[in-house]
Length: 208
Image (cartoon, rainbow, N blue to C red; front, side, top):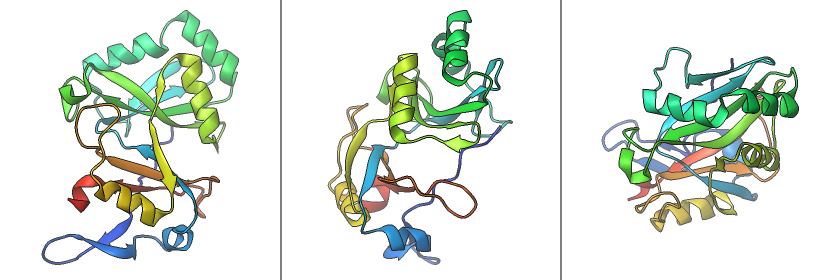
């Protein structure tokens, strides 16, 4: 089932020397063209990418790739959140026999920055059902149905405004330290010619 798309950085990097970002030099022409429009910004979580896969009959869990190992504690948490007969019925009620993938981040414990986020948990940020990417509001509804969190929405505005927001060294809503970064998407979902959604990541460490 579909691996999650690779989200591009906002700016290109210097090819030699410092490897710093070249502000104003966008990594994709679509980003430059859309930069002045309104984008929604969600918190980027420092964890491991997880796919919760519904094939129309049963649920399974995968990492970013099919070969990626998922920590045991995280698998146990995923079983708690999505396993069992009652959750299977919920999947059936929500999606029927349509294949669906819930994309989220496993975080906390010993995952990436670990205890900064507290105990091991899973947070939802995207979903695809029967080949169609869902709108943010629909993904939030799925999160509410399962009683799980959706990634925090931290603001909105142009991409220039998003960069200025990151330069202010904002605090995370999930841990008591600096934000890892944000993922920005156009307010109206837009897609590249290959069908992948247009979005961009902006990391705090690139602007310290």
